[in-house]
Length: 448
Image (tube, rainbow, N blue to C red; front, side):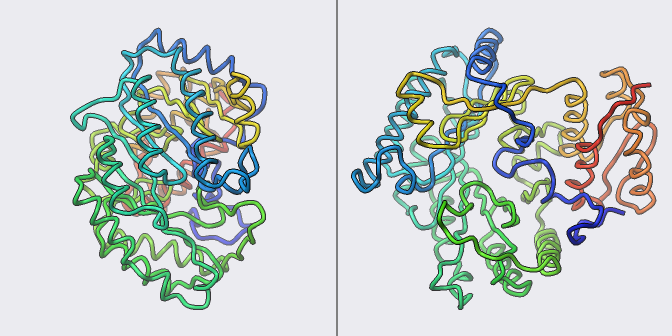
């Protein structure tokens, strides 16, 4: 049986040790600098020819003043963001001119730092001049916000710009609060933003919640989770501080705080499942919990859920284009990623060059494993015969090293296994990430 909460060094498949990056849900460990801007432009032109719908992802650095192209002490935060936005608009133009205005934007995500109302309007006006955004709530347009820089006015401005999903980041504890958990447990700021989202008519509200810091205990984390559940968000993204999403990673020069013990971390994971499942949430995977009436849960029930570089989505047939520092694009079998060094990002755009730094292209065996893991993660079921017909293989032979482990999982009551289907049973849903990870590690060299 897979030990979801095993200690380091033990043979285990665990979701927080998988190859998927919390920022993009793509195997960034395989990215290399042999992929560049010409590869991206060729793929974008194919997208234009096929007139496929688009999913756009725009990244704003969460702390521009600490690493901006021009020394921040000579600019100030406002001017630093202005400078970054100018380069961002240049990138949008360089890529957008190769796309068709008829390609509708079905999905849009604004990530990273929370912009001011003026900067938000400036950015969205530029995007709308270049791309075909949908009206009448037809698209899924989401934004990340943080408690320190977001108020009701910004929430209202986001809604006016067409955003209908919002993700609220729960900040790390301040140094002054480190000896007292009281401020960490205060739900009032989160409650205020959730009230704003409900008032302005956002379609869903997600709350990000991290666990695993040394100052956390299972009891304090359980208390925090209870306060969040009482606020009734539509979604919760629960992540391990050992591998946090980009906007929660310490800035250069910041002190990296110690993590709690593996025993406490395992207890916190178990608390997540116990409390959230008891509260009626469904576990989708990769730390994402949703209410049963949420769009993602409904898409999963109908077999329409997909997993892309932007995470779980009901718009799996879009081409994904990323703009900004570290942004990732995915078109057909190609992944590309922009440089994560803001100085290089801005210098390249000053020279009218795309900031593409690295990427990865699926090979045949990788495509098979990707299809298997995506369908198993999204459907909680895999049609083995369909995979065999599509790729011309015998499944138990192709995944010869995985098949005995699947048989053990079947005996343990986590999955139902036959020569036609793999179905994840209710007892195995919290293990879905580890089960999928078995196929990610498989070499898949045997065909027949």
